[in-house]
Image (cartoon, rainbow, N blue to C red; front, side, top):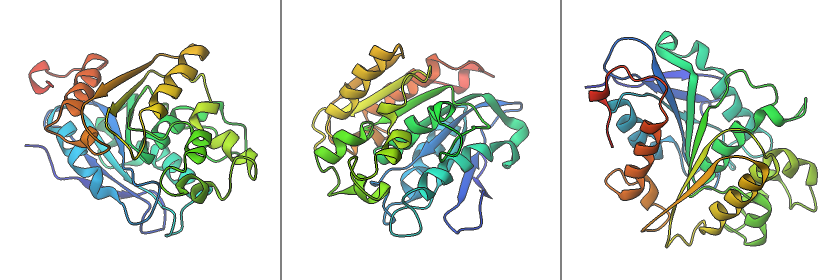
Length: 266
């Protein structure tokens, strides 16, 4: 049995908090941060991340589920990006920080959370003054689950009925400077390995998003893998499904800290 999640506020807003779930063994554990999706909109929240975080903690990771301000509840540009960056940077002060191996941090994100996961991995490339610049905690790997990884293409395809435009406050033509620092496809290379897990039948965020990111990342010299699985947009966060099995297998293979191999497994 793992301990119950402990809540830590990283800002004054009710949506600026994270939940830390520690594994059931002594000593430091590698960290997986889980970012929920929902096209960055307020009606979707951390409840989507909690089952994944609980499963990861049961498998031996220190799991951190993050809530952040979303469009319709104080989020959008730049608050949503500021919040996710602040949540990562708050990990050294989070509950159980002595158990968090911050040299081995992976970020897992679904849909819009996949965008945010790929974006936080690119924070070291951001210019001073940009949201999220000067990261305090480095990201070592990313799993993008049906991620929105090419924002310009998302606008062109009108994914989420204008969700990207709502997030950034305009189109790429209207606010190009925002896209330049918020679009993961424009912030390559990061040097961070990325696994893109995507449902073959996903019509909410089409597979093209992951394939575009792989093409751009590979051309830039990054290691980007696309794993296509049966199913729709939500299949990639089904704990009983093939997508989650592949995700856990990939995470297990790249662990740098393994306290007891018997606690792990796909």
